[in-house]
Every structure is written in structure tokens, then in C-alpha cells.
View 1 (cartoon, one colour):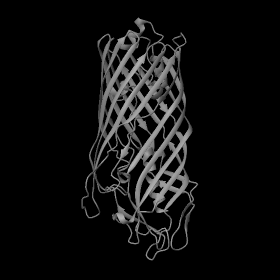
View 2 (cartoon, one colour; view 1 turned 180 degrees about the vertical axis):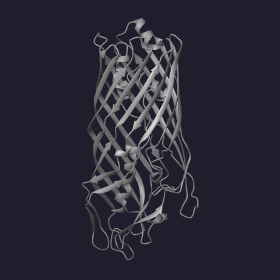
View 3 (cartoon, rainbow, N blue to C red; view 1 turned 60 degrees about the vertical axis):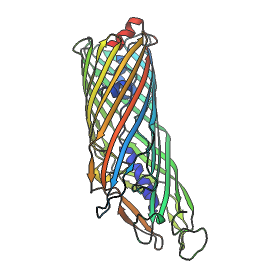
Amino acid sequence: MSALLLALSPIAGAAGYYASDVGARGMAQGGAFIAGTDDLTALYYNPAALGNLEGPQLMFNFAAVHQMVKFDRLDEQAMAFDEVKNSAAPMFVPTIGVAHDFGTDKLVLAFGFYSPYAPDLQYDIDGAQRYTLTDALLLSGNVGPSLAFRAHDWITVGAGVSWSFLYVSQDLTTTASIDGGTDDRLFDIKSGFAVADMLAVSGNLGVLVGPPDDKWALALAAQLPTRFSATGDLVLDFTDNAYYTGELEIGKIIYSDTVTDEVTLNLTLPLIVRAGFVFRPNDRAELELAGVYERWRSIQELRVTDVELLVETQGEPVLFTEDIVIPAAYQDAFSVRLGGNFAVRDALKLRAGLFFETSAVPEKALGVGLVDGNKLGYGLGVSWLVKPRISLDAAWGQSFLIPIETRSSTVSQIAVDPLTNTISSGKFVAQGTYRSRFDLAVVGVTWSFGAGEQDATETSAD
């Protein structure tokens, strides 16, 4: 039972885990791309901004995402362990969209796939962090249509609906020892957990207000809460534990070698509200101030159901069937972004932006699977109209976690005594110093396949 509880704990973190915005142009402007969105990433930022597109378009973006993590663990006596690092390779994430205006300036219909940029995490299986995480993979995305309608010369409204999916995989280690919590590898239990929901429904809404001359625009958009009911398997491997044996043996207690259980994780991602104001002082320059609010406080716990875990021991087999409630206690997060672009030539546009973002993860929940805190970041990029209808985009961005040295993390081992089947909190395993940097490289191409040569050029240079 303790291994199950601990194995599921990082899943709670996957919800509040930091993931950046999408697209080369948006990333280049530090995420200040809500009112001035001029490509198909409007599917993500603000569906009303699809009204900014000039004619039918096809877009493809491809991102490489990596999070540098360094953790120096301290035990209760402030003794240091060897530093651990995230050794995972960059994660590659596509964004795809297509839009058509049906020959009118009032209606745009788009369809696409988008996914927030989240990194892969992988640590030493024998490292000091192993009781929190050894490997994690989080995949999520949205596929579906969005519609923008110009209801008035000054007002465009938009809405999108999407099929959403979530896949979470976690590996870590827990402990079983008659002495309570311990870092001794002889008492480790390897745990693996993977759940998925491929059939959730999500949606977003948006409005864009501005004069016909496009000198400025004000935008408001909302990503609606998304409910997932993810099912999958938990696997516990006792074979390396000092108390394990496959047959009766004096001094050995656990008879089960590998235990598998199918469980369900119920998770609702929160409401996200985006707002932006863009100002265009002339035909070549654009500046946007934007803000994002994420209502993570709506998640105070996560519930795991359909549990039926049976472990063979020297005494009676241990069967656990109760729902597992995982405390989350997330806090609301917000960010402020300032970015813009400038057309140095009709076919060449430079982009840049800065942002500050707070964390949804309280310090008491901090661990290597939840490396998040207040962040400062920037983006740089370029858009180049290589042909009248084809624009290439490239962007580079980074965000820097303000270093955290914490002795208040309450993430701990959950230790089970296999003789008595009693459960207690073991050692604190997430106290220490965290350093992190988020790196992003994005390239993209947009083909304005229905626009004339003049319209395509104006789309790139405006």
C-alpha cells in the first residue's frame, strides 16, 4: 500500500507541472501573442485571433524542449548527497493547423493539433532523488476545430472544441524495512506507473476588440477546465528487496515478486484566462502586453479509484481496496509578458519578448518531479517571407527558475514495516537546493495557399 501511495504522488505533480506556450512566433515574443496572434497558434492562444489571418493558411511548427535540473539533496541532519541531474534528451513536439476563410472577411474555420511544451525527465535510478522520481513522461494534446466570426467591424468572437488526451508515466523507488525509512538500497522497491485518457473533451473561447485600422486590439480568452479519467497499470517489483523470497525462507517476509494493479486517476485541469493588448504605432512595429491567470487552487486533491492491490507476506496477504486521496494544495499562478516584432524589411520580421511567471507548486510539494518556482524568461525569433506565400519562422527561448534552497519540503518516503504491515513517513527526500533552466528551440513554416502575392507579403510584414 505504501508503494502505491508513493508511486501515485508524482502524478499529482504532473498537473501543476510547468509547461510553456506553443509556436515559434509566440515563443519568440515571450508568450505576448494573445491579441496580435497572426498564425494558426491562435487555436491555442485565442480562437478569436483567427480573424487576424489573411486568407487560407497551412502551418507546421516543430519544437525541441529540454529542462535542465540540478538537485543537491540534504538529509535531516543537513548532510549532503551527490548532486543529481536530469539526463533526458530533448522532447520533440509538433504543432499543426489549417484554416480557410471561404472567401469572406467575416468567418474563419480552422482545424489543428497543439500541445503545451513539457520536457522529459530522467534521473539516476540509484541517485539520492530516487524516492521521488527516476523517470517521467507527460504527453498531452488537443485536436479539433475552432471558428472565428467578425460580429462587428470592431469585434471578433471565437470558440474551439477539441478532443484532448493525457498520458503520464512515472518510475520511482519506495522502501520496505522493519527499521522505518532508510536510504539503504537493500530495502528498495522499484515502482512503475502509467495511466492514460484518450477521450476527454476540452474547449476554449475568445474575443478580439479593435478598430478597423488595426492600430490596436484588446483580447480576452479562456481555456475551459478539462476533466480526465485516466486508467492504467501500477507495477511493483520486490525482487531486489532484502525481505523478498520466492519461497519460504527464514528471515524473509515478502513472497510476491511483481504485483500489477489497474487503477484510475481522476484529474481536472484548471481554468486558464489570457488577456492581451497590442499596439501598432506604424506599419512595421507591434508591441503587446499580456497576462495569464491559471486557477490551480481548484485542485486541492486528486483521487485514485479502482484500487485492488494484493501483496503476499509471511502473515496474511495484504489487500488494499480503498480510494487513494492525494493532497495537492496547488496555488493559483499568473504571468506577465511583454513582446513585439519589427519588420526590418518587407520580407523580414524580428521578434523578441520577456516574461515573469509564478509557480502553481507550493514549496512543501517541491521535488525533482515538480521542479517549478517563480521564473524569468525571454524569447528571440525571426520570420522570413522566403516566397510570396511561404513564411519561415525560427525562435529560441529560455526561462530560468529562481534558485530554491528549501528545508520545508514535506515530500518523504512512505515506509512500510512488512512484519506488522504498519505504515509511516520515512525520511524527507526532497529538501535541498534546486536549480533549473527551460530551453526551447522552435522552427515553423506557414503557407498562405489562398492569398494573393500582395496579401501574403502584407501578412508577413504587418
